[in-house]
Structures are given as structure tokens and as C-alpha cells.
Image (cartoon, rainbow, N blue to C red):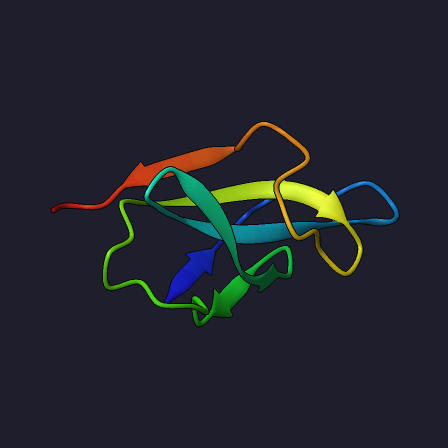
Amino acid sequence: MFVGTDLPRPAPGKTYQLWYEDQGTMHPAGLLERDGAVAIEGNLGTATAIGLTIEPDGGSPRPTSTPLMLLTLPA
């Protein structure tokens, strides 16, 4: 579960997108409204990090911007 609070409203046509990193590759993990909770999607069993980017509405198959946040997960 990821909880976002007080995130600035993204520009028109943009959305927040969650990612998980597995073996050096970022995988889509769900879209996030400005504030609120979302279940992280995907197989997180071997994930090494969770990231958040701003992407075009509807999300992207790969990150198109620098992560706003990249949280390393314990091994």
C-alpha cells in the first residue's frame, strides 16, 4: 500500500505513477491521485525499490521522468 498526502496537483494531462524495481528494471505498479491510498500492483517479492514519477494521463509502460521519490526496500 502506498499513501500520498499533500502532493501538488500534477499539470493538466499528467498523473502520478508508482513503480517497483526488480533486477534493475522499473515496472508499472499503479496510478495515484494527488492524495489517498493505492495498493501497489505487481510481484513485489523480489522488488528492490518503489518509485514515484509524473507521467502522461493513463500512465506509461516505462518511466518518462526522473523519480520524485525512490525508496529502497530491505533485502
